[in-house]
Image (cartoon, rainbow, N blue to C red; front, side, top):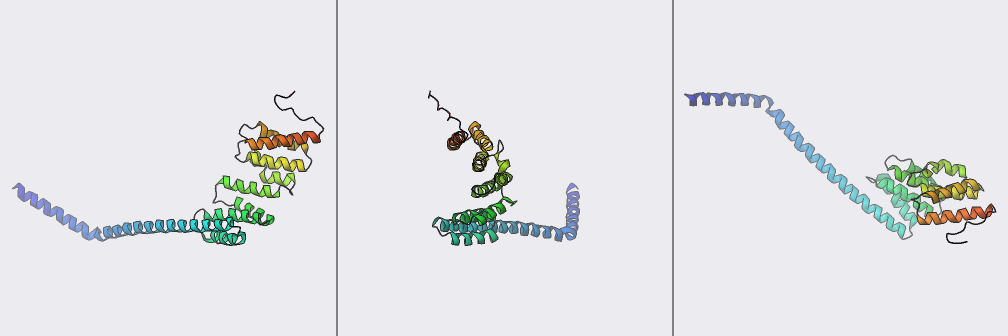
Length: 227
């Protein structure tokens, strides 16, 4: 008797399943097909992105080779194409390098404009944007006023900024060029007081302070062990 009930129960379950399948089966199949299609599409897109990145990388390396060979105009043309149509981080890298190449060819105005444009980009890390600002200021350090350079990179000279040593040197030299000896001394002294300043920065800062002392009529500071 129990076997009969079990068979009846199985028939009922089978009938319910058939009814449910007739009702919802097409949707289940459609969903399965959609999942497969989306997965395949994503994999295809991922492969395409990786291929594009690899191709952009090859083009960027080729452009750098042109630059290393002294073919700056050809390098700039190639980098401009990369900047306009490459994928990933390469457009920003190309824009930065274009500015460097223009500086190498003596096109200071073009280089400064290029670095300024890089600094305004939102698809680069802040540190790279700050480096672009610093590069532009370096190119202008022989001609721009202290006020203009301060407006450009004054905040980069703040304590804790990774570029502070370079920014202080640029501003110190600019102040010295403008005969603001007090401001110049302040920037170079900040370099000496900063425990993280490189030895090269310290040496240059000490030389500049000695120069400022001589211009102010002060005796040069004695080296340790003298006297």
